[in-house]
Image (cartoon, rainbow, N blue to C red; front, side, top):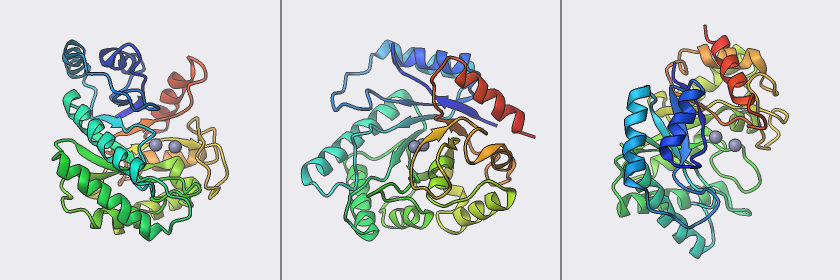
Length: 279
Ligand SMILES: [Zn+2]
Ligand SMILES: [Zn+2]
């Protein structure tokens, strides 16, 4: 089973692989640049070469890149919408430059708009981005927690977006367990996990499920609040993760933890916990 963390790229991409390796990761996720700014520094060719060499050597893969946080592919504001598409393309190009397999993106938000409007808006943005740059890496749409204005908090909505895309070959999904739980997908029991697996199968299809964000949830079930928490210590709990990790639909899907890193011990503890729950 491929398990890893979202790791920092501070100091360069090669250092990020080193961090992942030291944490015992067999897969990893990174940002391609500062996630909270629009400015982009060119990628240092030596750093990329080292990044590619090390991930090969350590057998870390697939590599997931997460898009910049400022990107909003559902924005009702024309300027931000246009900029988001351009910036999404930059993230996609950087993902490919690094030789990473996947680019994970949230669908976006537009307060006051109906989901139908947002679904069209996101699909148009993705179609435009893929026209500007034909993807080599696979774009993964991540389910959201359903916070105010969010779209993509049901698998039906995610599936609706995919159905509107002209090219679906390079499209998949990333299932975030915390977001799902906050949005009403109960995975506290084996039965609940079964139901979610069936839901994914009937909507987007399990073959599109290329990655998972393995996060416990600090807030209550169906709270619509996105607060990631340590594996087994949140409202999903150990039994839920045991069921998720060992379910036939999810077993072979690479899993990335985006759990809090308040102390040095947090990541090693979460990794140990996950490994202990895998049968
Ligand atoms: Zn996530
Ligand atoms: Zn989240």
